[in-house]
Length: 134
Length: 204
Picture 1: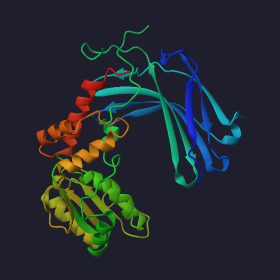
Picture 2: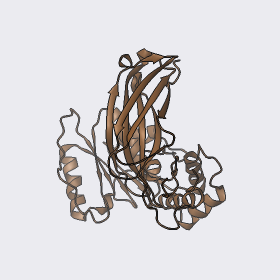
Picture 3: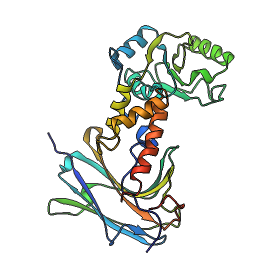
Picture 4: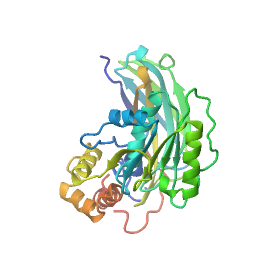
């Protein structure tokens, strides 16, 4: 039985906080995947809302890769990405609503299976109401 | 350096994205299964009602039932009716190119006016459409299942949601939220969302 591919997402910065207009650069690594099992890899930089209500989301950057496009080294495929971050919406941590930015990598496998990994980051420095922040 | 609030790297497991119908597997009551419901539907000519109080899991069951109906070759058309929605949104009948007539699924059938319910059932009979509805009390269609969630089910759902952080909410806290809302699981999960926020929101 083929093993499940492992996805690692890394950002090229010291932290995970960015300002609007900054360039978000990073890589994803895909390990343990048999090339014949991987149909495609989708990379998105997106935001979504999270909380008690309806969800909203928008994709800022999207790319679909196939393994034969990606460099292979030390047992892993490596996909690099870079995008200039927009001016809104800023990340926000409210009680009933949060705006979450993330890099998401979705691997489409044979037989309709998928593996997803997500790395969150913060965009902007939104004011958080008193009593909510630490 | 920003002075904004903490940057959370994890989600509240009671957020809508994790508790919306379809995100949680439907835990069938004892003596009931998806196969049995499908079999009953086939016997009744694809007519049936799913009964239960607010937050008892009717929409969650639909989320599991719809793909199962589709897998039999019958297309489905879902209408989700919210408070005050007295008629079906257009278009009805829905356009379909499938060989088989569709099964119309109405989540919140009681929202429709009596006249629109009557008209819908007549049209479904006329066009040989199936009709599966959710309602709080009987609306005269063959009963597929009556959902009566209990504390045991509530604990099971919470345990499933907390599978990556077991013990973060105690069974006593789940029981308190369950009883506070008289068994309405949706409201119970909203309470647990708040409890999680109070307890863990500043965790980095």
